[in-house]
Amino acid sequence: MQREILVLYASTGGNTAWVAQQIHRTLAEQGLQSTLLPVERCTQQQLESAGVLLWGSPTYGHGHTDLRCARLLQQVQGAQLEGKPCAVFGLGDTKYDADYHIESATILEDFITSHGGHLLTSALRIDKSPLPHLPAIEDWARTVARALGE
Image (cartoon, rainbow, N blue to C red; front, side, top):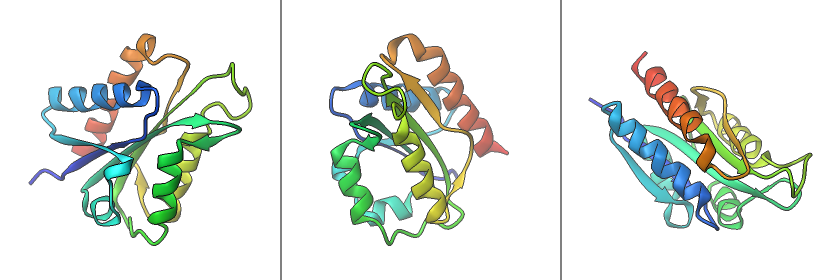
């Protein structure tokens, strides 16, 4: 039985949504079904019931997630992710802040591990526009698919 894969994302300008869609498409090419869900529609129950959690957010300000993602993180502080396979994707742009430009990935990884989740692979970190990074996005999604098959 295949575990449900939830591709959860926060997106303001559309870039993180585009990355989530590419991950969803690549997983499908690998024979895996996933559900795309924007963070503003996610509940703690959905977060906990997903068999696999892939979570992405852009970085804003001096190392913060998207505001909607930050709200969800606050709402699900009691989430139980014990042993859940997870992976994170984060976007940022060094022109805004060279020190914290993809800090959203670190924030999400810290949340997952502090709530008992298991990271399948290192975070996908995308600097600037995601379009030139399509091969890296597809490779990352294939790495996730392989890790789920092991």
